[in-house]
Image (cartoon, rainbow, N blue to C red; front, side, top):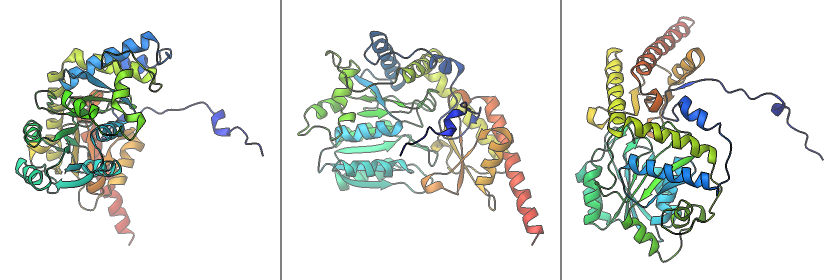
Length: 394
């Protein structure tokens, strides 16, 4: 039997233009898109390695770190979570997961596969974790590794006490992993000053780069632990000692570890260059101002934010309660069908409960905030009108 060429591939590629106001990815700038149209380079070509070095310096800036072990994992944001856990965990290690949404549970699933004894400390629904709650869990479980998402994109909750958690982890000789995929660029993050051992983020959110490369950094303390492991990390692809050699992190000759996408490197390099040119504090301030404007608009529309406390709201992924009797799917479909604008529903514990509106990178502007507020209101009113029409037929 011969399998014929698929007919669908005879048609020209069509990609519609959409405004991505969901939890990520965000829209790439023209600068980033143009960069990715450059010719492909070999993964060991000196020009490619030079771009990797430049990307590495940009990552150090956005994390505010001087860590040598700063690089990218070739993969989506999940690969950062995998790499952090894979390298720090050995069989039998006690690992504590901070839960403010879906991501602590996801990390727990991964950690268990690496042989960890996993425990959880879970916040009240719609709240962040207090220092007292976490300290109590440390006393009970004495973890070797503690994981927390600074911003949980499923709930729109921000964890504001990372600095204190860094001190707590040192007191208990524990390693601190912080997921900044959804938060970086929208709120302050100081890796070295806050004593964070591993941090990773997403290239496709506030950075405004393409998905597929995950910036990550390991502290000297974490690197020492990894080098003293009794066994090698269980996944070759995530072995940070090998990846770091490819990225030129350790002052040793570069090795071939995998074939990195030069195209994605170009996009991330330009996204980082723009981020650095604007300045970290200015980027954070813009994201926070846009979120405050959105929150005021939500209140004026008679809607309610899911996270009740203002200081616990994540500026980059804003969660709004779905009004009673409104079908969130119909609202999202209306916005996409009429305006090609993405508005997302909930994830994990917030499914059916919230709309998620992302204000990240190119989409964190006053104009985009006003646009999405107008479209959200129109879509909700249209959904309510549809309900009234259905009821009149009964």
